[in-house]
Length: 396
View 1 (cartoon, rainbow, N blue to C red):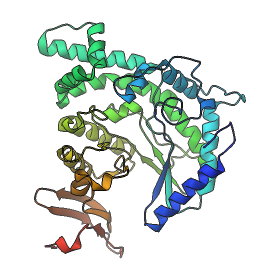
View 2: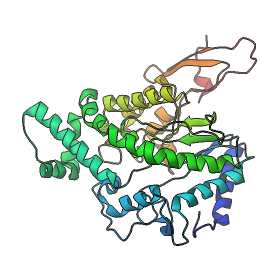
View 3: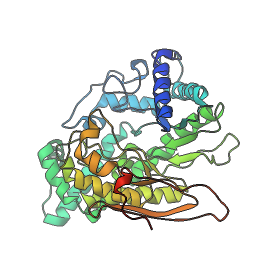
View 4: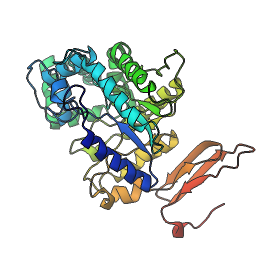
């Protein structure tokens, strides 16, 4: 989108315009998200090469693509320099360029009612402090292992265990209950808090300021850090308006994934781990007093029937916690997969007159329940999406 510093790709933006028009024609709203995986197009997708200040450090891959966050000096250094706002070749800080790009986008869509908001960055990663985070996690797992077995594992043994996908899956079995999982991952809170308060929050505010100069009507969606995806408690806060007052148009846009995501063992996701992660998200939303929009969950990809129980569990938690949500991701052919047809496409409330209290799909009984508290003089409609009206047998 920005092939050179300060130069915006109009052809690319026209492609986005076209897709927004498709959404409008199909009665869909759009959230624009600045996506990255491993920071850069050099390693996956995201920042252009000119904004990837990796200082020539080596790039290392692991058993799973996302392991590079923890292993690659190049990826970590590129993130470090982004958070530090190091200047690119033109002498302007790359974070300043990022904010200017967001302002350019917001100015383009400020009057567009199909676009409802802007997700400021996908899964922000802290950079080289990820090495320390890995050591904290391995140490915490070593403590748990000793507590459960009396066996001491040294740093080399722990590293080898986590580097091999098979032994990692065996270790994850120990973390399949909430108590053990909390013992290990809660130990990341302090490091995560330092990153979110010292770097991430400041970037969000800088981008928010740039957007609010040209657009005061769209929602800003704030994600927690990369580690928040695993249930590490987040410390992000609502951004403020230029006069210092809290911005009312801000939503919390967490992602939530079990540790087996992107592996062949995706169908073995732990219900307790997922419940723990979603509960952490719910608590943060309540603390922020913001609506929660689960911007990513699932990532089941080509798996069809084996993940149906996992999908049902996730949906039950999403409904129980009244979260807005978007499944990741609707790749070509997803509509033909069993979990899509049996779980993702389901009855749900589109809008309610008043306050939504609860709703639930019981997939086994093929039933749907909903309750809401209506506003006295409000004549707005309550709208419920039903896939097959012909199968609706009872409506109280």
